[in-house]
Length: 316
Image (tube, rainbow, N blue to C red; front, side, top):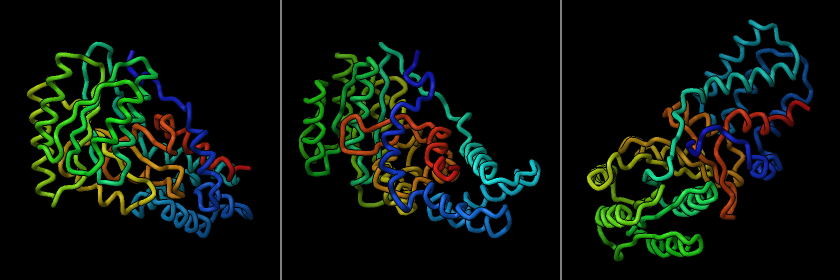
């Protein structure tokens, strides 16, 4: 059975402990808005729209949610605060459309590669370490390729984590061509197979054209060395940067076939609505969230559990 046979809510409560303490959290704002509940009217829905936008759901997606919520309230004769909250959760779940997210299947004994992309500072290299630990805990064998050769310290950082986790990390010389490091890594793991290869890539290139050219080259060389590689291309986005981070990440989305997103630093933001903006604007699933410095501070993303926990305080 694959790693993602069923979505889990395993560690999300741990992350939400930090999130829910923020006075600016989505749940806290909903609590404030609905605290003096006097019925559902246009003013309430307008204020709810503002709350969603401030939580980084995005203007277009927020308007869509409010329009759908208004229709649902009218069709189902909803008049209570609890009914409004439940309807909001249902609408957000519908907008995210988790049912159409492809299941990830990693089979033991069949080498698959995850290529990680993202701007510098988004938590990409740290996320690789957390992912490696996560997969190791699931009983998979893991290898790393340190192909972010342009950022000072990126290779050393990944090598140190690899040593702590007791996994092999293929490296190249400083400022080496990233594609050549990927080739070396693929060839090493062909001779020394692992279940999952996680490859770090450069997060800074001079312009979008260079980025597209480099990513195209990297995809092509790994595809020659390992059939079907890269099997997944995951984009790391720093959630604390909100819509700005999403705009910066758009160049990666335009440049290559991103298959999923890892949202980092979720314990440090009040703008958790970005998960809906990413899915609605780019139709990209959130695969994982990270929420702290600890190596285990990572969990699979499960929207329904996330929403219910984040805004449950508004129901009380």
